[in-house]
Image 1 (cartoon, helix red, strand yellow):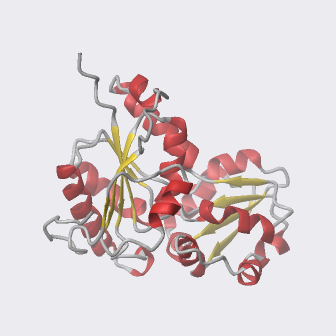
Image 2 (cartoon, rainbow, N blue to C red):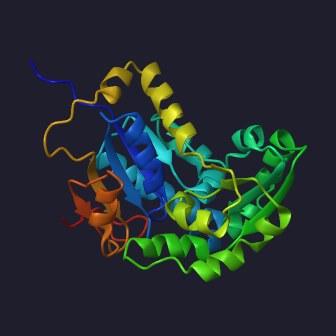
Length: 287
């Protein structure tokens, strides 16, 4: 009797930040196959128009689905999630999960009602963030930091470049002055910086990101499709690698295989300059 193929989830981001989400999904659902797709040739998204972001995301994800049919798509990028989800859902019948800053769970945790929201400059400016704060944290003081360097510092970790702690400490000064006890990591890159952030903000009690919520949503969708039991199967064969393919639209970052392995996401196949680094190109890839 042939074994039933495990369900597959495609995780998309503009860089390596989505690996924090992929790692969380893998911890919750170790029997899943994962495909990781990074538009690092288009990184960062924060300085691009909505039209460009939508075009790049839809083209790359559509090409990836043709080669790696998947059961769920996770857009593990806050900037992309604010604009691309309706277009993806119109393009494919595969369920799509986006990510939003975890304001609601953070408001449930804070004791002194003072939240710190750490996001990209683009996310901090978006009106939807004002709506989230108004709806879920209206009784809290919310201090926002949209620092342009943090995402790059997270990307640099892959190459073994350490986070500049003095620069990070200076960037977090508004949170210390506001005496926040809870920080929302409003970008999927930021969990990769967590240990350095804790050094910069030792008085913060709670750190909240969206990884757990995304993993639960993926589990719910697979349950609806009758695939959850396979995704929860923890019987892993020796040498099995959860990421069947890691796809980068530009050159793969130096050290990415070791970095992913350290997160429990050892890739079976690594393709770079995929597919040609630009929307509309033909997927070729190189191992």
